[in-house]
Image (cartoon, rainbow, N blue to C red; front, side, top):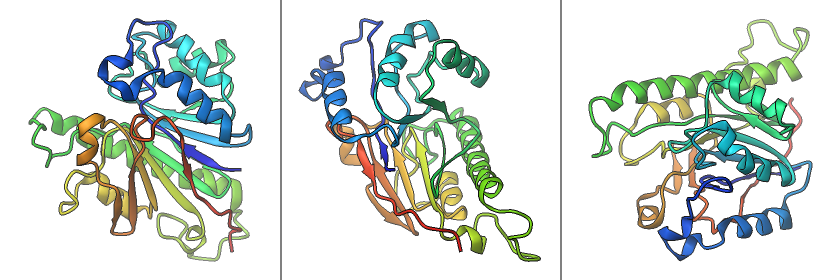
Length: 264
């Protein structure tokens, strides 16, 4: 079982939104994505897709794009991007998935998942305070998204404990939270749409949350074209940050290298 990741699919099977107007990197991108996807991803694998999935402005308009994703191998975990206007309440989206037999798609919002021995959490994210484009009105949304990330991280830990740890296995007084000893063998991955780091010299709510919960790898998208040059790809305070926007990856899903470990 493997985990892959790719953001910013920008599908438009039901809308007139050709992406090649943004340059040759986007020519036939859906077909290229499908070819790369099918060449490596198996039904037992999981693919993380953090945002900007469909140009549809309603669930009805997004259906063809979601059906395309459904047709591809693997389980897909989706989170919201800034262009995902089709995304309604969690209940509406989940009901829509059930009604349309989109059984391989899962929604990430204020929750977490466990894939093997890996915890998956995340949020949409937002403009960071240190970003010159950030305005005063962005602060409220930024703080809300930091809170959502923390809730998602906490939920992934709770799910893991429910699945793998019984009361008899826990030692008296043993911590099983963000830095608990029994959790140290578990890999933690966060997926955000917006970059969670702008200037590696500055902390922010996202970087602090990722470090607090022991996240090893943070995947993000949103940046395209020349903006790729502003992306931070590297390790900071134990967290590896990696841009996985579709055009940056040339629509070849990024393999998240993991090793299954047995909890001690």
